[in-house]
Amino acid sequence: AQEFKEYNFKALGTELRGGHLHPLLKVRSQFRKIFLEMGFEEMPTNNYVESSFWNFDALFQPQQHPARDAHDTFFLTHPAKCTTFPEEYLEQVRYTHENGGFGSFGYGYNWKRSEAEKNLLRTHTTAVSSRMLYKLAQEGFRPAKYFSIDRVFRNEAVDRTHLAEFHQVEGLICDRGLSLADLIGVLQNFFARLGLPKLRFKPAYNPYTEPSMEIFSYHEALGKWVEVGNSGMFRPEMLRPMGLPEDCSVIAWGLGVERPTMILYEYDNIRDLFSHKVNLSMIKENPICRINM
Image 1: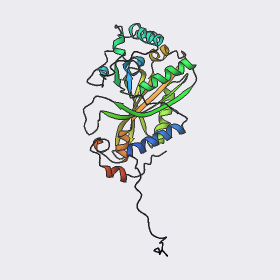
Image 2 (image 1 turned 90 degrees about the horizontal axis):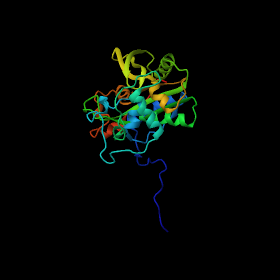
Image 3 (image 1 turned 90 degrees about the vertical axis):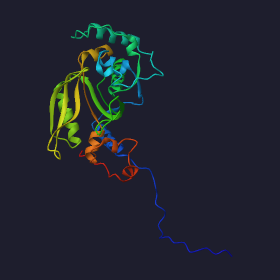
Image 4 (image 1 turned 30 degrees about the vertical axis):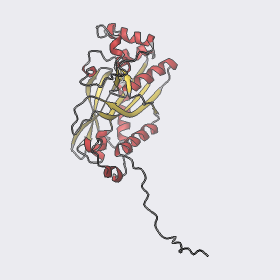
């Protein structure tokens, strides 16, 4: 008869080596949880390639704006152009850029379709917001709360605080009769959940929001006020051509994921967090992400 060695039920098995979450993914999941708790709906963000029309023109950003220069934006060579647009809406956007409307004089220049057709790597997730707001207007207006968290791309010099690609968080609320006071109240609620209850606001300029505000929070460890985001109310020149009602307003804000992650995990160089030189042991050993919610 065959004899077998006695089985040791107390012996430990081999160490399991499963996957590990990157700190950026941990922080991103915390942001997502906060938005869902506040009743927001997540926008689809799978279009890394976008046309200049949705990325710039639909936002009432003029075609001569420096952000549309090749020094700031990654333009595609293949496919170089997008030729499919909602034509009636495109015509409304063209007219508003050239002649204004809705209380605006416009920009008074000769708007070119060829510029709007250029494909690029999206420079902000607001390109997604413009598509969602247009879709909302076409399906019939209803109050809505949207958010997105995903990668964006800009042609920037890489250093310890900047990368050519990074993650952007964006939230917006579309409803009737919203005001700047509503925006400030939502921001105080949102950032308090992030553990940043002390906020200050500074007037700013954005092509597609008016009024616009930079958001500052008091950093206890640094002992000073630091910029944590940007915000504003989308301009009528952006919303009315979409077909949204005249009494409809949209408040919105955005911030990056990398900077809060660097603060939480005590990194002073963004390239140690997200680049080809990242130490893989960091990904395996980084602690649980806890944000004061």
